[in-house]
Amino acid sequence: MLVTSCRSLLFAAAVCACPVLVTDSLYAQSGFWDSTKDTTDRAMRFLTMREQPNAERARDLYQEADQLFRGAASRFNQTERDGEAEGTEKKDFARAAKLFARAADAQPGTALAQDAMFMQAESLFFSDQLPDAADVYERLNKEFPNNRHVDQAAARAFAISQYWIDTEVATQDDWFKFNLFDASRPRLDAEGHAVRVLDQIRYDNPTGRLADDATMAAAVEYMRQGDFETADEFLTDLRETFPESDHFFNAHLMGIRCKLEVFAGPKYSGLMLEEADKLVRQTRERFPDRLRDPETSEMVARAAAEVAYRRAEKLNDRAIYREKRSEYGAARLHYQMILRDYPSTPFADRARQRLEAITSYPDVPAERVSATLLKRIFPDSRRSSPLETKFNSPTGERSESIYR
View (cartoon, rainbow, N blue to C red):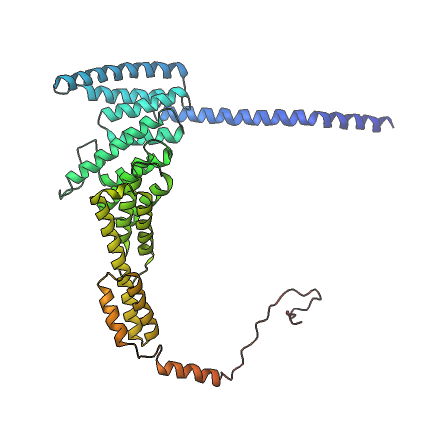
């Protein structure tokens, strides 16, 4: 009896102590992994010659970089005012960028790191290392979403993209496209990098002040490259997302042009023509004040006339196809649609002539009518098997169907 009581007391004590032991074990395991992670991080920093985590060291590096940046900026402004030749300002900006990068690395994930990364990008921007600056602006927004520098970073990124596009336009006739010496531009495909930067502005701050500007700039660049389908996607996004934008009206006019350019011809889908026609009507409904300007009104009228011409051309092509198949009923229907909806197009005269020529023709070929009647009178003698639905029978019979 005494032995049983002792065992019960020991078991109760073990049960009571178990949560404490488990908690201590979890804390010990967590501490072990944190210690291992910290040791590994320090070792990797040592091997890659990066700054070790040190708040005081980070502040010292930031202050040193800030003094260097301010001195270079002061001399840069003085040089611009006096019109003198550049001195060592760009080199000092480049040195400041390296110090800011070390400061951010010495205290990652903090407000100081956020400011240091922004100033690193600014230093790279003023030292004309624009591809590196764009990368740091992007990394800043990725590591610190909605940071306090997001608008300024977007403005810098937008300026970088426009510079790359303008430079590419100015050098588009050059036969050698690879950039070997200019650190302010990407090595290759500057316009592609520019559009990627514009798209990143939209992604990082979709409701920011420059989001609609970046969308329009990307659409314009795609139109310049001849990629009207992608340009139409950006313009559609602008119309749907930024109805208060200053580019709203131009997005309608450019959208009509893009849709007409994407349309592949009368033998292909007419979806783009329908969307273009809808956009023309929306333009007239939404901007009556703009259409009071004769030049703008004429521009929209020409776009509407082109849409009507393309749609009439497609109907005419369908009618010709039906005539070739001796389906005169369908051909007459298409010709009548041309006369009803697009009487001012050149295809209206032809539609009128063809209607007179095929008035007495049967709707469908006579042999096709005979074949249909014969099939109804003499149906196929082969019996079709009924559609039976198999399912698991509650009685266990595998062949049971809905008819049992």
